[in-house]
Image 1 (cartoon, rainbow, N blue to C red):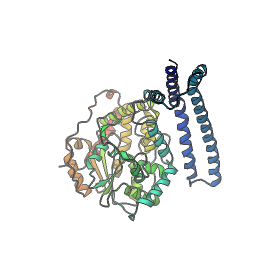
Image 2: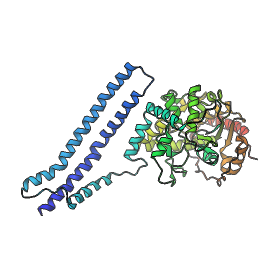
Image 3: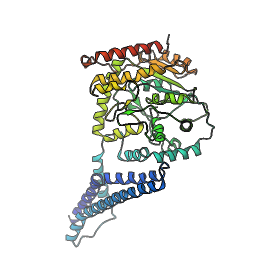
Length: 466
């Protein structure tokens, strides 16, 4: 009986220790780890003077020491609390011999540690995954350092002053993901995939460490029946521009058009090459923010092509509103989703939604984000900009309805426009989600007329599939 109670208290002490780790040490350890890496990021910062850097280092050092002290204190308290039940019981049973090596002792430790499983949440990101993402993606100086190291080790070819590449773009919820998947063929293109996250500036180093165990597809967070896997292409290259422009174009409420200088452009070309497995493929990326720098890059390079998709304004606005509500709810439940989207430059919807600083952005001041008219104004602001820059020689303008009805013909037309053979078979017709006439009675009629006029103008410039 005495020995049974002894093992019970060993079991109880293990539970106390494990639950304490999860409930008390989880956040302090996270803060300690991220603050420690932030110190390295400060040291690697070349944009500030030594005296200013010393101040940041010293200030951050105090923060590190604070979190270190908190972690040590909590760990000490947990150890005391976990051994206290065994100690008190042993103190009363003087004849009892302590056991720390038998199979019974280790069985109790194992069974007690199973309590950790009760804290496993159903989420795409584990605690350690969130920590790794934060360490890597939240430190631009560290990212640029890894990029330079990656270039020295893995980038051997010369960089052309004008480099051919293909960008798929358009306003979010316009079909850019499906269009990118239609184009992508490993024999022709190379691109960035989910497997490269979070080391988006050092993909080859990460590839040597991380090998995806499965390519099984699942529905993405948009809840739009679009499947993705580790090998799927996604809009991930924006992190490059965020890191090298230091978020200078990202304002509180909007994203600004900006200039890309020759030095950053050459780095961008090298960045494209890091995802190449052989020298015969062309870089393909999906980037819904590319219009912000399209004209700037065009000054240096006339070889790249833009595949830009547009959709009926009212349907597009409804889809944007639905996703905005969807992601606001997800981000309220898990703040990491908001951080993740901010790191990757996805400001299309959600709590931190931002609009593009184009000529019609003043329209947005008249509406609330819960109003369908706001998202119609977003459409007008974006696609009125497209009408100003559209050039059939460089921009392949794809109609969303054409794409849905006959992807094979769209692919054939893109072959001609892009001047390349696209070998992969086109998929069947797509079946997008149907939208109701809900909220249409409240829409700004003048705004809808303006949007429809822009849509008709785009129709005249679209890719011919006949």
